Length: 226
Length: 125
Image (tube, rainbow over all chains, first blue to last red; front, side, top):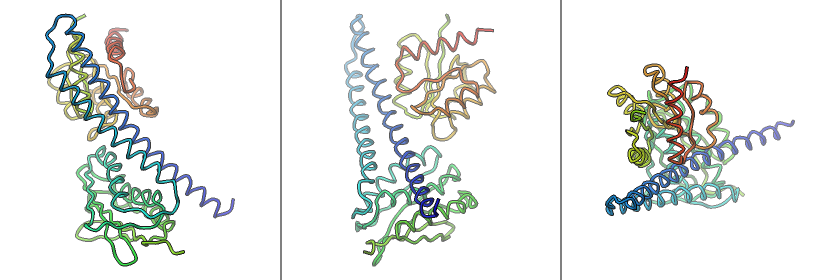
Protein backbone atom coordinates (compact mmCIF):
# COMPACT_ATOMS: atom_id res chain seq x y z
CA UNK A 1 0.00 0.00 0.00
CA UNK A 2 1.40 3.42 -0.88
CA UNK A 3 2.30 5.76 1.97
CA UNK A 4 -0.42 8.26 1.02
CA UNK A 5 -3.09 5.52 0.94
CA UNK A 6 -1.85 4.24 4.30
CA UNK A 7 -1.98 7.76 5.75
CA UNK A 8 -5.45 8.27 4.31
CA UNK A 9 -6.49 5.00 5.94
CA UNK A 10 -5.07 6.11 9.30
CA UNK A 11 -6.86 9.47 8.99
CA UNK A 12 -10.13 7.68 8.27
CA UNK A 13 -9.62 5.36 11.25
CA UNK A 14 -8.87 8.33 13.55
CA UNK A 15 -11.97 10.15 12.31
CA UNK A 16 -14.17 7.12 12.84
CA UNK A 17 -12.74 6.50 16.30
CA UNK A 18 -13.42 10.12 17.31
CA UNK A 19 -16.91 10.07 15.81
CA UNK A 20 -17.72 6.79 17.57
CA UNK A 21 -16.38 7.90 20.93
CA UNK A 22 -18.37 11.14 20.94
CA UNK A 23 -21.63 9.62 19.67
CA UNK A 24 -21.32 6.81 22.25
CA UNK A 25 -20.85 9.36 25.04
CA UNK A 26 -23.77 11.55 23.95
CA UNK A 27 -26.08 8.58 23.42
CA UNK A 28 -25.13 7.29 26.89
CA UNK A 29 -26.17 10.64 28.39
CA UNK A 30 -29.43 10.64 26.42
CA UNK A 31 -30.12 7.10 27.66
CA UNK A 32 -29.59 8.34 31.23
CA UNK A 33 -32.24 11.01 30.65
CA UNK A 34 -34.71 8.41 29.38
CA UNK A 35 -33.91 6.19 32.36
CA UNK A 36 -34.67 9.02 34.77
CA UNK A 37 -37.92 9.89 32.96
CA UNK A 38 -38.84 6.19 33.17
CA UNK A 39 -38.41 6.22 36.95
CA UNK A 40 -40.17 9.55 37.49
CA UNK A 41 -43.16 8.54 35.38
CA UNK A 42 -43.14 5.17 37.13
CA UNK A 43 -43.37 6.92 40.50
CA UNK A 44 -46.31 8.99 39.22
CA UNK A 45 -47.98 5.74 38.24
CA UNK A 46 -47.27 4.27 41.68
CA UNK A 47 -48.83 7.31 43.40
CA UNK A 48 -51.93 7.16 41.18
CA UNK A 49 -52.33 3.41 41.76
CA UNK A 50 -52.03 3.96 45.52
CA UNK A 51 -54.71 6.65 45.23
CA UNK A 52 -56.98 4.23 43.36
CA UNK A 53 -56.56 1.84 46.29
CA UNK A 54 -57.76 4.53 48.72
CA UNK A 55 -54.53 6.22 49.79
CA UNK A 56 -54.85 10.05 49.76
CA UNK A 57 -53.24 11.48 46.63
CA UNK A 58 -50.35 13.85 47.29
CA UNK A 59 -50.96 16.34 44.49
CA UNK A 60 -47.89 18.41 45.31
CA UNK A 61 -45.71 15.35 45.00
CA UNK A 62 -47.36 14.38 41.73
CA UNK A 63 -46.82 17.89 40.42
CA UNK A 64 -43.17 17.77 41.48
CA UNK A 65 -42.60 14.61 39.44
CA UNK A 66 -44.12 16.35 36.41
CA UNK A 67 -41.72 19.29 36.86
CA UNK A 68 -38.77 16.92 37.18
CA UNK A 69 -39.82 15.16 33.98
CA UNK A 70 -40.02 18.52 32.19
CA UNK A 71 -36.50 19.37 33.40
CA UNK A 72 -35.18 16.07 32.09
CA UNK A 73 -36.90 16.60 28.75
CA UNK A 74 -35.13 19.98 28.45
CA UNK A 75 -31.86 18.26 29.31
CA UNK A 76 -32.55 15.58 26.70
CA UNK A 77 -33.37 18.19 24.05
CA UNK A 78 -30.03 19.93 24.64
CA UNK A 79 -28.18 16.63 24.36
CA UNK A 80 -29.96 15.67 21.14
CA UNK A 81 -29.25 19.07 19.61
CA UNK A 82 -25.61 18.70 20.62
CA UNK A 83 -25.50 15.25 19.00
CA UNK A 84 -27.17 16.60 15.89
CA UNK A 85 -24.73 19.53 15.58
CA UNK A 86 -21.81 17.16 16.08
CA UNK A 87 -23.08 14.79 13.40
CA UNK A 88 -23.52 17.67 10.95
CA UNK A 89 -19.90 18.76 11.38
CA UNK A 90 -19.08 16.21 8.71
CA UNK A 91 -21.45 17.80 6.15
CA UNK A 92 -18.73 19.88 4.56
CA UNK A 93 -14.94 19.50 4.66
CA UNK A 94 -14.49 23.24 4.25
CA UNK A 95 -16.73 25.94 5.64
CA UNK A 96 -16.71 29.14 7.64
CA UNK A 97 -17.80 28.63 11.22
CA UNK A 98 -17.71 30.31 14.63
CA UNK A 99 -15.03 29.15 17.05
CA UNK A 100 -17.31 30.30 19.91
CA UNK A 101 -19.99 27.78 18.91
CA UNK A 102 -17.58 24.98 18.05
CA UNK A 103 -15.65 25.22 21.31
CA UNK A 104 -18.80 25.64 23.42
CA UNK A 105 -20.15 22.42 21.97
CA UNK A 106 -16.81 20.66 22.37
CA UNK A 107 -16.44 21.78 26.00
CA UNK A 108 -19.95 20.48 26.76
CA UNK A 109 -19.12 17.14 25.12
CA UNK A 110 -15.70 16.85 26.77
CA UNK A 111 -17.11 17.78 30.18
CA UNK A 112 -18.58 14.32 30.64
CA UNK A 113 -15.21 12.67 30.00
CA UNK A 114 -13.60 15.09 32.45
CA UNK A 115 -16.29 14.57 35.10
CA UNK A 116 -15.85 10.80 34.94
CA UNK A 117 -12.20 11.32 35.82
CA UNK A 118 -12.96 13.88 38.52
CA UNK A 119 -11.19 16.55 36.46
CA UNK A 120 -12.56 20.06 35.89
CA UNK A 121 -12.70 21.55 32.41
CA UNK A 122 -13.32 25.25 31.93
CA UNK A 123 -13.80 27.18 28.72
CA UNK A 124 -13.04 30.89 28.49
CA UNK A 125 -14.26 32.65 25.37
CA UNK A 126 -12.89 35.99 24.15
CA UNK A 127 -15.26 38.94 23.96
CA UNK A 128 -14.97 39.09 20.20
CA UNK A 129 -16.27 36.03 18.40
CA UNK A 130 -13.99 34.76 15.66
CA UNK A 131 -14.95 32.73 12.63
CA UNK A 132 -12.50 30.68 10.63
CA UNK A 133 -12.60 28.74 7.39
CA UNK A 134 -11.55 25.12 7.83
CA UNK A 135 -12.90 21.60 8.36
CA UNK A 136 -15.05 21.95 11.52
CA UNK A 137 -15.03 18.20 12.26
CA UNK A 138 -11.24 18.01 12.03
CA UNK A 139 -10.85 21.13 14.19
CA UNK A 140 -13.05 19.65 16.89
CA UNK A 141 -11.22 16.33 16.65
CA UNK A 142 -7.86 18.10 17.05
CA UNK A 143 -8.89 20.19 20.05
CA UNK A 144 -10.48 17.14 21.67
CA UNK A 145 -7.21 15.25 21.14
CA UNK A 146 -5.38 18.01 23.02
CA UNK A 147 -7.89 17.87 25.89
CA UNK A 148 -7.72 14.08 25.91
CA UNK A 149 -3.90 14.21 25.99
CA UNK A 150 -4.18 15.69 29.50
CA UNK A 151 -7.27 13.72 30.52
CA UNK A 152 -5.66 10.36 29.79
CA UNK A 153 -3.17 10.74 32.61
CA UNK A 154 -4.76 13.48 34.70
CA UNK A 155 -4.91 13.24 38.47
CA UNK A 156 -8.41 13.50 39.88
CA UNK A 157 -7.93 17.08 41.09
CA UNK A 158 -6.54 18.37 37.78
CA UNK A 159 -8.01 21.39 36.05
CA UNK A 160 -7.93 21.69 32.27
CA UNK A 161 -8.45 25.10 30.71
CA UNK A 162 -9.56 25.76 27.16
CA UNK A 163 -9.56 29.17 25.52
CA UNK A 164 -8.82 30.89 22.24
CA UNK A 165 -7.63 34.24 21.00
CA UNK A 166 -7.58 35.99 17.65
CA UNK A 167 -4.51 37.44 15.98
CA UNK A 168 -3.99 38.88 12.54
CA UNK A 169 -4.24 35.95 10.11
CA UNK A 170 -4.75 33.29 12.78
CA UNK A 171 -6.73 32.03 15.76
CA UNK A 172 -4.89 30.35 18.63
CA UNK A 173 -6.70 27.69 20.61
CA UNK A 174 -4.97 26.86 23.91
CA UNK A 175 -5.46 23.80 26.09
CA UNK A 176 -3.61 23.97 29.40
CA UNK A 177 -3.16 21.96 32.57
CA UNK A 178 -1.07 22.57 35.70
CA UNK A 179 2.23 20.70 35.60
CA UNK A 180 2.34 17.87 38.10
CA UNK A 181 -1.32 17.03 37.52
CA UNK A 182 -0.75 14.74 34.56
CA UNK A 183 1.91 12.33 33.31
CA UNK A 184 4.45 14.00 30.99
CA UNK A 185 5.52 10.74 29.37
CA UNK A 186 1.92 10.02 28.46
CA UNK A 187 1.52 13.53 27.00
CA UNK A 188 4.73 13.14 24.99
CA UNK A 189 3.28 10.02 23.34
CA UNK A 190 0.35 12.00 21.96
CA UNK A 191 2.32 14.99 20.66
CA UNK A 192 3.03 13.47 17.24
CA UNK A 193 -0.62 12.62 16.84
CA UNK A 194 -1.75 16.17 17.60
CA UNK A 195 0.92 17.60 15.29
CA UNK A 196 -0.35 15.32 12.51
CA UNK A 197 -3.95 16.45 13.05
CA UNK A 198 -2.84 20.08 12.93
CA UNK A 199 -0.97 19.56 9.68
CA UNK A 200 -4.22 18.36 8.12
CA UNK A 201 -5.78 21.68 9.15
CA UNK A 202 -2.93 23.79 7.78
CA UNK A 203 -2.26 24.64 11.44
CA UNK A 204 0.88 24.80 13.55
CA UNK A 205 1.29 23.33 17.02
CA UNK A 206 3.19 24.63 20.01
CA UNK A 207 3.88 22.76 23.24
CA UNK A 208 5.14 24.98 26.04
CA UNK A 209 5.34 25.42 29.78
CA UNK A 210 4.37 28.74 31.37
CA UNK A 211 3.80 29.57 35.04
CA UNK A 212 3.90 25.87 35.97
CA UNK A 213 1.27 25.04 33.35
CA UNK A 214 1.75 22.91 30.31
CA UNK A 215 -0.01 24.38 27.29
CA UNK A 216 -0.83 22.92 23.91
CA UNK A 217 -1.49 25.65 21.34
CA UNK A 218 -3.18 25.07 18.01
CA UNK A 219 -2.49 27.96 15.62
CA UNK A 220 -5.16 27.94 12.93
CA UNK A 221 -5.17 30.12 9.84
CA UNK A 222 -8.31 32.25 9.55
CA UNK A 223 -8.68 31.05 5.98
CA UNK A 224 -7.31 28.13 4.07
CA UNK A 225 -5.04 29.37 1.26
CA UNK A 226 -6.65 28.87 -2.13
CA UNK B 1 -38.72 -13.64 53.43
CA UNK B 2 -37.42 -10.94 55.79
CA UNK B 3 -37.36 -7.43 54.35
CA UNK B 4 -34.85 -7.14 51.55
CA UNK B 5 -32.23 -4.40 52.08
CA UNK B 6 -30.87 -2.82 48.92
CA UNK B 7 -28.33 -0.09 48.23
CA UNK B 8 -28.68 1.72 44.89
CA UNK B 9 -25.61 3.53 43.58
CA UNK B 10 -25.66 5.90 40.60
CA UNK B 11 -24.35 9.42 40.03
CA UNK B 12 -27.73 10.41 38.54
CA UNK B 13 -29.39 11.64 41.73
CA UNK B 14 -32.96 11.78 40.37
CA UNK B 15 -32.67 8.21 39.17
CA UNK B 16 -31.30 6.64 42.28
CA UNK B 17 -33.56 8.42 44.80
CA UNK B 18 -36.71 7.88 42.74
CA UNK B 19 -35.91 4.20 42.25
CA UNK B 20 -35.27 3.83 45.99
CA UNK B 21 -38.66 5.38 46.74
CA UNK B 22 -40.42 3.06 44.28
CA UNK B 23 -38.77 0.02 45.83
CA UNK B 24 -39.77 1.24 49.31
CA UNK B 25 -43.38 1.49 48.14
CA UNK B 26 -43.09 -2.20 47.28
CA UNK B 27 -41.82 -3.25 50.69
CA UNK B 28 -38.11 -3.29 49.86
CA UNK B 29 -35.86 -1.24 52.16
CA UNK B 30 -33.81 0.76 49.69
CA UNK B 31 -31.15 3.39 50.25
CA UNK B 32 -29.45 5.57 47.65
CA UNK B 33 -25.85 6.69 47.16
CA UNK B 34 -24.58 8.95 44.40
CA UNK B 35 -20.96 7.84 44.25
CA UNK B 36 -18.65 5.01 45.20
CA UNK B 37 -17.33 6.68 48.34
CA UNK B 38 -20.87 7.24 49.67
CA UNK B 39 -21.73 3.64 48.85
CA UNK B 40 -18.78 2.26 50.81
CA UNK B 41 -19.60 4.60 53.73
CA UNK B 42 -23.17 3.28 53.76
CA UNK B 43 -21.94 -0.32 53.68
CA UNK B 44 -19.62 0.31 56.61
CA UNK B 45 -22.66 1.39 58.65
CA UNK B 46 -25.16 -1.31 57.77
CA UNK B 47 -25.57 -4.62 56.05
CA UNK B 48 -27.21 -4.80 52.63
CA UNK B 49 -28.44 -7.90 50.86
CA UNK B 50 -27.84 -6.48 47.40
CA UNK B 51 -26.03 -3.48 45.94
CA UNK B 52 -27.14 -2.24 42.51
CA UNK B 53 -24.38 -0.11 41.04
CA UNK B 54 -23.76 1.92 37.90
CA UNK B 55 -20.43 1.00 36.36
CA UNK B 56 -19.69 4.48 34.97
CA UNK B 57 -19.43 7.01 37.78
CA UNK B 58 -17.07 9.89 38.59
CA UNK B 59 -14.54 9.26 41.32
CA UNK B 60 -14.26 5.63 42.40
CA UNK B 61 -15.53 3.58 39.46
CA UNK B 62 -18.40 1.14 39.81
CA UNK B 63 -16.02 -1.70 38.98
CA UNK B 64 -13.63 -0.66 41.77
CA UNK B 65 -16.52 -0.49 44.25
CA UNK B 66 -17.71 -3.93 43.10
CA UNK B 67 -14.27 -5.41 43.75
CA UNK B 68 -14.14 -3.80 47.20
CA UNK B 69 -17.58 -5.16 48.06
CA UNK B 70 -16.69 -8.68 46.95
CA UNK B 71 -13.52 -8.51 49.04
CA UNK B 72 -14.92 -6.88 52.20
CA UNK B 73 -18.59 -7.90 52.11
CA UNK B 74 -18.66 -11.26 50.32
CA UNK B 75 -22.23 -11.97 51.52
CA UNK B 76 -23.57 -8.95 49.65
CA UNK B 77 -24.66 -9.61 46.09
CA UNK B 78 -23.91 -7.00 43.44
CA UNK B 79 -25.92 -6.24 40.32
CA UNK B 80 -24.42 -3.90 37.73
CA UNK B 81 -26.37 -1.17 35.99
CA UNK B 82 -25.04 -0.47 32.55
CA UNK B 83 -25.80 1.43 29.39
CA UNK B 84 -26.19 -0.26 26.02
CA UNK B 85 -23.10 -1.65 24.37
CA UNK B 86 -20.97 -1.98 27.49
CA UNK B 87 -20.12 -5.59 26.67
CA UNK B 88 -16.52 -5.43 27.85
CA UNK B 89 -17.46 -3.76 31.12
CA UNK B 90 -20.27 -6.25 31.75
CA UNK B 91 -17.84 -9.12 31.30
CA UNK B 92 -15.31 -7.47 33.61
CA UNK B 93 -17.99 -7.01 36.23
CA UNK B 94 -19.18 -10.61 36.03
CA UNK B 95 -15.60 -11.82 36.27
CA UNK B 96 -15.14 -9.60 39.34
CA UNK B 97 -18.06 -11.35 41.02
CA UNK B 98 -21.20 -9.44 40.08
CA UNK B 99 -24.32 -11.60 40.14
CA UNK B 100 -25.69 -10.12 36.91
CA UNK B 101 -26.30 -6.86 35.10
CA UNK B 102 -29.30 -4.78 34.05
CA UNK B 103 -29.38 -2.43 31.08
CA UNK B 104 -30.88 1.01 31.59
CA UNK B 105 -33.72 1.91 31.53
CA UNK B 106 -34.83 -0.82 33.89
CA UNK B 107 -38.46 -1.84 34.39
CA UNK B 108 -39.12 -1.94 38.15
CA UNK B 109 -40.55 -5.47 38.17
CA UNK B 110 -37.47 -6.75 36.30
CA UNK B 111 -35.28 -5.08 38.92
CA UNK B 112 -37.21 -6.72 41.76
CA UNK B 113 -37.00 -10.14 40.10
CA UNK B 114 -33.26 -9.70 39.73
CA UNK B 115 -32.91 -8.61 43.39
CA UNK B 116 -34.79 -11.68 44.58
CA UNK B 117 -32.78 -13.95 42.30
CA UNK B 118 -29.53 -12.48 43.66
CA UNK B 119 -30.62 -13.16 47.25
CA UNK B 120 -31.82 -16.68 46.39
CA UNK B 121 -28.50 -17.36 44.69
CA UNK B 122 -26.64 -16.51 47.90
CA UNK B 123 -28.58 -19.23 49.66
CA UNK B 124 -27.62 -21.83 47.05
CA UNK B 125 -24.72 -24.20 47.70
